[in-house]
Amino acid sequence: MKQVTAIIKPFKLDEVREALAEVGVSGLTVTEVKGFGRQKGHTELYRGAEYVVDFLPKIRVEVVLADDLVEQAIEAILKAARTGKIGDGKIFVTPVEQAIRIRTGEADEEAL
Image 1: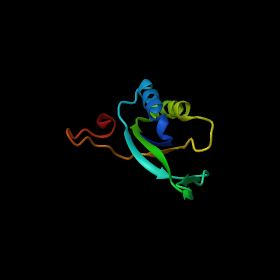
Image 2: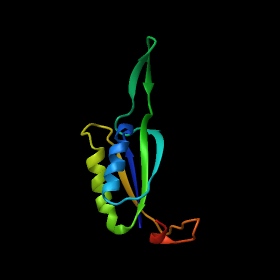
Image 3: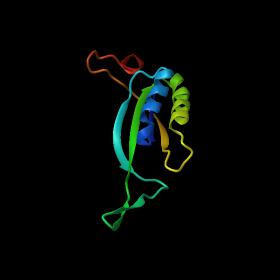
């Protein structure tokens, strides 16, 4: 099992969710986060004063998958989240040692 974590632009969430559903992903966790990478934030003007916005709003999508679905999920996220502009985000894949469904006690892939 693997956990696929994608940091994406907020307006791309619906497209990413639909793309993951098409490849068979049944559940995911979404978190509103803030951060920056190479963008380094940007400046804005408010009531005549210029200020720097260091942390940009992003969405963190987390999915735990069986190993055979990981590549399909990555491709789906790449196609759905890409705008071609700076700040499109990142995808991280990490191994998951164990998963347990609390309600039933099912473990590992049965728990997904």
